[in-house]
Amino acid sequence: MWKRIISITFLLCLFSTTAFAHTATVQTGGESKYKAVRLTPEIYNAANSDLSDLLIKDSKGENVPYFINSGFHTDREGRETYPMELINSYTKDNSFYFDYKLAAAMERDTVATSIEVATDSMNFAKAVDVYGSYDNLNWDFVQNDKLYIIDDKSKLIIELNKPQKYTYYRFKLSNNLEKLSFNAVNLIYSTKVSEKNYFIESLIPTFHIEEKDKTTLIKIDGLKNLRLYDVTIDTDSMFKRIVSAPLGSEKEIYNLSLNGISYNDTTLPLDRQISQDETYVITIVNNDDKPINIKGVTVCYYADEMVFEGKAGESYTIDFGADATKTAPVYDIERYKDEILKGKIDEAAISAISYDSEKEKPSEVDSKVIFNIVVIGIAVLLGGLILFHLRRNKNSI
Image (tube, rainbow, N blue to C red; front, side, top):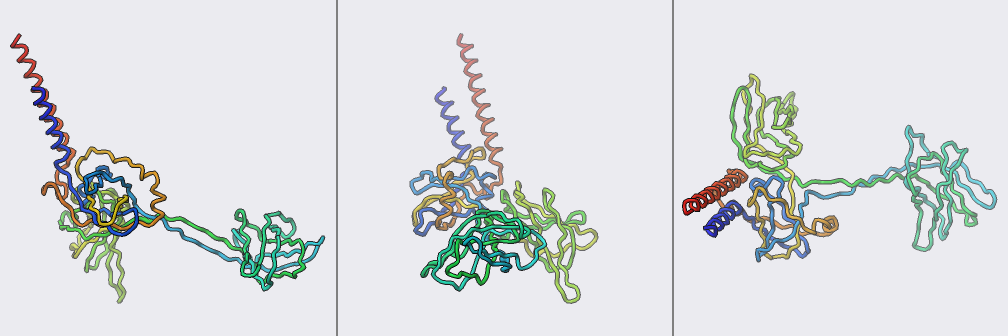
């Protein structure tokens, strides 16, 4: 009897965890060690909202470690140049001095990260002490460095150890037998900013219109679990109205043509909203005006990539939608993903998606509800069998 109970329980558990598994076929190419495949809306719709149920498998059915990448970094460099003018040069104690000040008065502090010089002198190498001053009276030592032009090698930039804000700068040379002079001296302020860029994709979803209580409801399908960037309405109507989305996003959009000039902004930012429902509703307030003619809708969303080690031409699949209670796998590759992202990564593509059940395309039944029903059913079955077993033992006594 107990063997039968265990067998039934095992089969029910097996059914509850595999009944709604889907697969996406991944095409790979390129010679790089690592591949990246971008997830599609269909995968988001049927997967867990946190993507914890995603698995990559090779042709042998073995799990392949991966990590989720949501974007890339770019470095943006800036450079500001502030010319200086020579105000004094003199010799003192066998040392030669050049004093400079900013050529133009500035309303704010001038920050410098380096000093750049230009000269017609050739074949020299000079040690330079750099000083700074705010008033041309009190001088602070900044640092020492070298300037040189020797054959085809040159160094005409003094990189400051830290940003400085002086108005005056002084060069002190141990001697100037070469009669070194500078055509130009410029303060340079260089910046380098690293920016995070996200993968943003667009889609043209299916939708239908419903007019209700002086409002137009645009009911958009296929956005479940997507992190939404914005939605744009395509229309040829002339209007200026308030449009809103769930969770408080609201904006006045318009499409106007006045005095021969067209003005339009029909895009509503969605600030990473995530739709938990199969249908996402946009509301346009019409008041007493006629509804506008909506020709189409374009949705932009934040996308993710699965990055994994793979071989060109080998078959890989993504399993998803199998278990709503599953926690995300933990792989070592996550620990060194920054190093991987610095190198070349081949782009892979999803060529086909296979749904285990047509009723689940995308998931129309909450798999958590199904799981809970199965668990309750198992509990009731086991309780009934145990009660039956106890009564039979009592009768036999």
